[in-house]
Amino acid sequence: PGAAGLPAKKKREPKVKLKQLHWIKVADRKVPGTIWEKIKDEEVPLPLDEIEEIFAAKQVKDIKKAAEEAEEEGEEGEGGTRKKKVVILLSANRSQTIGVLLSHLKMPHDEFRKAITSLDVTKLQPNFVSQLLRLLPSDQEVASLQSYTGPKEDLGAAELFFFELLCIPRLKPRLQCFVFILEFNARLHDLSENVEVLSYALHDIKRCDKLIKVIEIVLALGNYLNGQGPKGGAWGFKLEFLTKLADTKTSDNKSTLLHYLVSYIERSHPDLLKFPSELSNVEIGAKVSENMVDEISKFKKEIKFIYEEMNRPYYKSHAKTDPCGAVLEKFYHTAYHDMDVLENNKKEALAMYKELSKKFGEDELKPDEFMTYIHQFSQSFKEADNENKRKKEEEERIKKRREEFVKQMAEKERKAEERRKVRLGSTAQEAKKTAAAAVKSVAAGQAGAVKECERAPGPGAGAGAGAGG
View 1: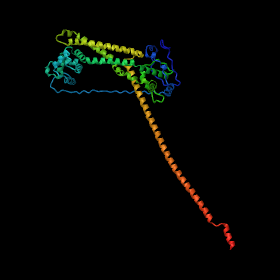
View 2: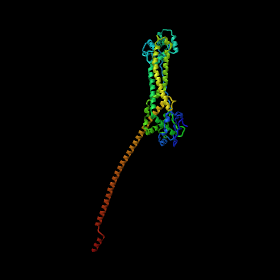
View 3: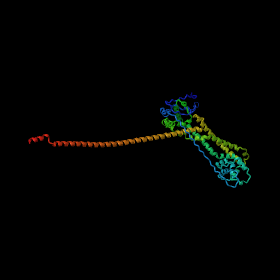
View 4: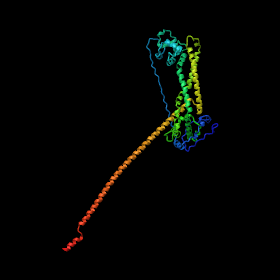
């Protein structure tokens, strides 16, 4: 039985057993309201005899190779000990790491402390503050620093720097807010751009009628190849199958179903060959959508963290001496508005995706998976088209060389024949001359013999003379 309101899909019956396509059929109940409901693959005029000849299931060879490459990167750190007559409370490696960070700090420690306290974005770079946040002293290091009672001037540079940091109230959350503020504009721009690119990619797919027509032809080919088998009579298939068309080889293993599809379209629907050019935004759309939702959620949580931090009792009670609370509050109102715009754009893009994925019967796929399948298919289709053209050009070159060779051989044969005729003609002429000379010689011999006979006396002349004497 077919889906509700749909007749059972009639299965095709090839005259010979054909190679099977291992697609996943779209469930009948999911067909209504999708592209599959309107597709009429049974009306596609397939060259059945040609298909049966090319994809006859003479032998089944499934060759699957998987290669995995792993790259391991190691980080080597250089340990260094400072031979100074100073009090060292940190490990040698920690002192060196902090020393490298301080080499990029182009201001006195007290000025640096003021910049951190007031969240002065004009004084410090995002990378520096981010590194500082990662290098904050551990609880053990804090305890070691706080237990030190000797002269501060005897301490190493790293220890002195940490002493300055520990004088800043709510140091870690303050630095977290500072990093977010410093990076906010760049991150907002990137996330907004990602949402925009996703929208462009979805519009490309939505408007590409050629893609639907190509899918219709794939469905027609697949239903004919699968014939009466369990995978025959499909209303539709999962989009992942589009990326596996090259896995089905022709009977002679010299080509694939993908290359045949391109060849068939070139002959019957050449206007469809350029459909990949209409999907120019899909590749980047697939990449940016992979982590887009998670990144925006993280972004939103960080704005919420700003809100929670600015409402801490400490900032309310120290508003006159610590400007951080006021800076956070001012930043929050701007950031909240920008986040609201970004969130609305994201919702619109995801609503568009939900509608489009449902149209293809793939509402369970993530946006990046959905677009990756379509992009991979369009790229492999374009590559197969180029390979077909190169193969055709090579065949034309071979044909041309063969014709040129045949022409050259014919010319050689013609010249050889001419030389043979010349030789035969010369031989015949010589034969004629020889024969004529022979005839002439014979004739001359005969004439001489006649004259000789005429000069010789006859038999009666001798007898008469005798009698008279």
